[in-house]
Image 1 (cartoon, rainbow, N blue to C red):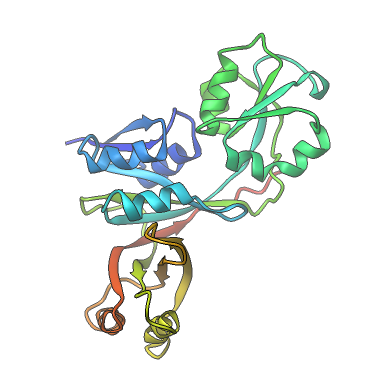
Image 2 (cartoon, one colour):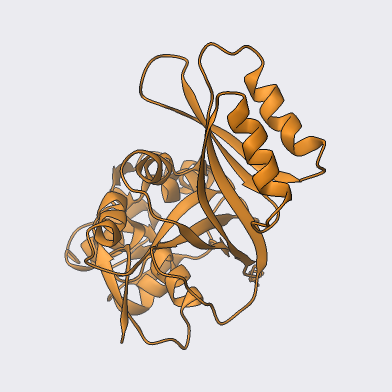
Length: 286
């Protein structure tokens, strides 16, 4: 049976590129959704079997909406992760030069990743944010008479009737976004990545030094952590969840022992997934 994969749409987004990387050669159909909550709700409500969402950019940091939705609104296991190289391009729907551009459309992350370029070449242009880079490219393609430009990826340029005004406008070449695959189904991918486990730890509010002892449970077992990040619990000022990435797959001894020690401190531990992660090589611009 063909599985359905929800992604942040419309067609032509970086999220679609990541989804196609994960499921290359497999029998799946791709379902574009307008917002990140819509993508995750599609799986939670059974409209699709799988979802792909952005979680972090190497320049702009965590995509908080994705993280908070996974924590507070859905409980779906993470099945895979991809670090995908991001190249931003400035596109127009008709021939024009920089002096003719009056407004630039894109996703807030894409604008932030191209800030130096915009300050240099389009310092006075108006910026309007869209739900995705592909939505921005699609929008200007539908209004070719307007003096508008969009920041997007190469896939969207192949889909919509637009042309490059300037390629590779991101401020940093080493620009990656991490994408997650979430699903209630056990998944297999064409490529084999390294393994990672992610947990959510909620500390007791009346336990001084709890975070130190949580980290100690991993340290003395020589378990390596690749990332730790706090997010508000939304129950009161100063109350936080901690998202911890562990650089190994779930086992039968070390990680269960660490989790039991953490829970003995009065903390809550939620396993968000044990899964392979991949890194796609950066294409060096010529």
